[in-house]
Length: 323
Image 1 (cartoon, rainbow, N blue to C red):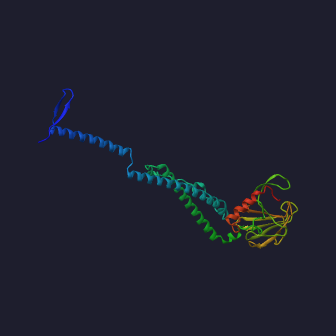
Image 2 (tube, one colour):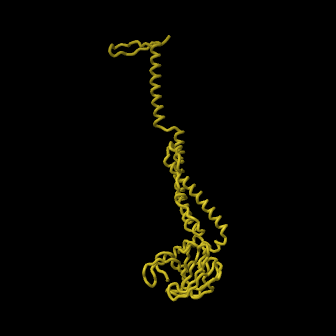
Image 3 (cartoon, rainbow, N blue to C red):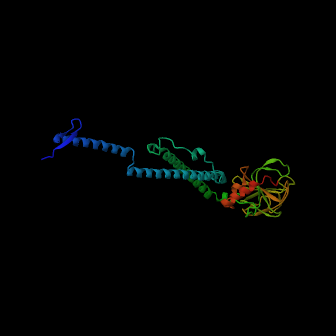
């Protein structure tokens, strides 16, 4: 028999019997079930929307790592673009000039990608802007590398077909200059040593004692030998063919005659101080299709990359020429 329960009633100052039948227990059960359900829902929403699950935490960490990797990749691509730009400048200003190849316009080297949106599938990503920017940089680098590769293929073919031309290119310095200390004044505007005015120096000066041997910088034919008291003084001009000619000025003496064929490295004359000159030195010029060009672009048989940079630095320090 179930135990009878009472509750004290302060109004009547007596004990009232508590009903504990089926209806009572059912109501209590429903009450606790409802309360537990509400509490469970509150915990569920708090856990779902305010707290991250272990899986979400892992995904967030992975997303942060991927974002960092994309940022690093983007920075490295920027560095690669700079290297490619330098290679392209060398290609345009040295290699293609040497082989007299047509320039590749920037409209081809740096052409964009037209047509459909290539990055549409990336727009829904959380870091879409970073991912799309990195993808675009990668596409640009790949295209520039492809164009540059084709350019080098073209130059290699020209080199194979033009062995005679390669021998004729003025590709060495005109005198012994292993330590580069004889490099005096380079291409560009300088102060004239006599007139003290700013003039364009269309060649390179090399200081050396009188009588120092001067070499032909490429195969060719001596086209002109001139003795003068002013200007270039005693000078030699060599026609190398293929549009190349070289000029050697202020010589003390000659070792060739007009019409003589010479080989690269052959002694053609000797350093002097003739003509409009303030000290013994050699003034050297390179002409391509009758246009004067910077001789330093053609020392690729003589110098390493480091030596070339050092020579350019030395030749740009002097603000005054010797002629």
